[in-house]
Every structure is written in structure tokens, then in C-alpha cells.
Image (cartoon, rainbow, N blue to C red; front, side):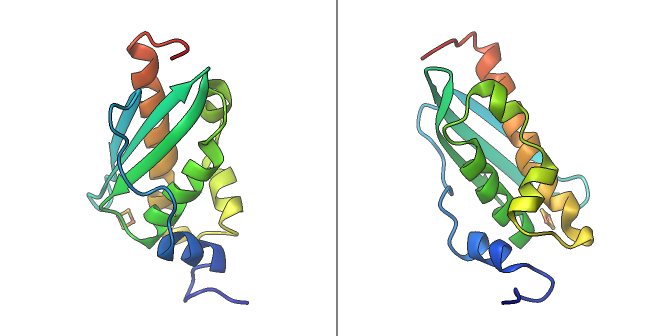
Length: 130
Ligand code: FES
């Protein structure tokens, strides 16, 4: 089955029914990133337990592609160790979404960028296993 317009069915599923929207109270790490092309902003907050991402949420003023890619990023990151989560690539996110129109790829890189910042924030706090 085809997706909506140039968007895959997977993108539309994550856009219309995202599971990871929100903000975590008392997060262990927070990362925020802006999109230079459109000015949209994405924020990731996460909780870490025993070196694993136990909870993760995102908030964005971004578009369909930004919402879908952030949601799939959170899905991929949850349960991973910090080191594993650092390795999540944009290519992996796009693969999970069964492709992304090239004109929207600048939107899909936001999630991975915000996650890296959130992890850095976690590490800078000197957290080990919380
Ligand atoms: Fe701004 Fe997609 S147009 S994040």
C-alpha cells in the first residue's frame, strides 16, 4: 500500500499516531536542536537506568517528517545502552521509515542530533548508572 503523497505508510503511521510525544519530568538528559533551513526546533528528554535509556520523549514544532523521524528514533533508542544509542544513524531512521523524500531529509536529521545532545547532557552531569 502506498503512503500519503511522497510519504511512506510508515512515515504517516508515526506522524498520525506518535508514541513518544511529550516531555519527561526530571530528565537525566535533555537535548535541543534547531533546523537551520526552516527554524523548527526539536527537544529530546530521556531517563537512564543501569546505563540504558529507560524512557525517552520528544517535542517538536517541526513538520510531518520531523515528527515521524523523531518518533522512530525514540522507538529505536528506548532500551538501548548509551553507547548503542550513540550509534543510531540517520540512515537507520530513514530505513525504518521505508524512505524519506530527499527534500525532507534535513528534517529527519533533527532527531539523531537532539539525541546526541541529550546524551552529552547526561554525561556532562557526571551521571553514571542512575
Ligand atoms: Fe522544519 Fe521539517 S520543515 S523540520
